[in-house]
Amino acid sequence: MIKINERVKHGLRLVDIYYAKSNYDHNEYDVVFYVQNKSPIKGANEFHTILLDLEKSEEEIFAAFGKHLRRGIRKMEKSDEVEYFTYLNPSDEQIESFIKYFDDFSKNRGIYKCNRQNLYQLRDAGCLAIEGAIEKQTGDILVYHTYTYDEIRSRMQYSASLNYKYPDDNKKRNMICNVNRTLIFKGIKLFKEKGLKEFDFGGVTLDCNNKTMEGIDHFKMEFGGQIVTEYNYYCAKNSKGRMFLSLKTMQEKIRRSDK
Image (cartoon, rainbow, N blue to C red; front, side):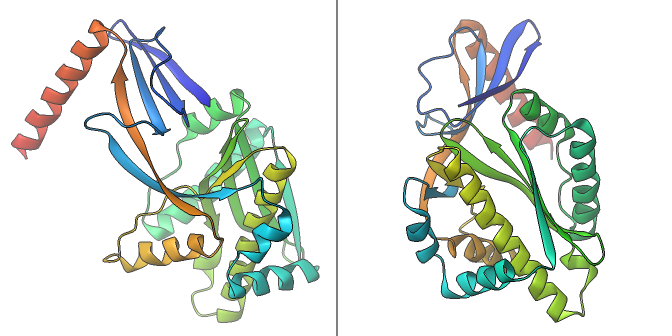
């Protein structure tokens, strides 16, 4: 379980809690925002993800990968073109380097920027890891990942690569894709060695009508694992919290009706 972003808002004590098995505890707060909680409540948002069992042997985990995935990883493991790195307690400089890289990537892809405050909060809680892969010849970082982790679970948080810089170079794009696969496998092995039990691929949409997201889902499913449903929601812990959430719900309804 990860607990971050403790704050006081309108006289209320709030906190974000990741990967809790239930919502019965944490009564020292007025409102808790649960991220990927296993116990739903009315109005909770479903979150689908893939969990890989790290208590299996490395050989069992690798054997469950798709054939194409295994081939790409073996190819990169035999290559000396790339150097891999891991920061388990990243410095400010290392976090900022990742943020710049991801924001350049997100601008090109037309997606969200990363949450700087969240990265620092996770690092300060001892729950952030950064991994990357550098092409030796050019010095370019080809792939960058961040993970959140606690004593049980590691979760892919952000992933970015330089694929977008090579729209017409299929050989380079395929190489970067294999580096990405290999970096994920290295992350799996790292957290298994640390004694964690689960590797979370950071969500799947299960939306067959969105070809881009369907492709990302398929990529994650190549690693094996099991699709599970968890829940994101605010949970009031007392009357003050219930009043706050009631007002919040009313305000959201008013905003929607004004659109």
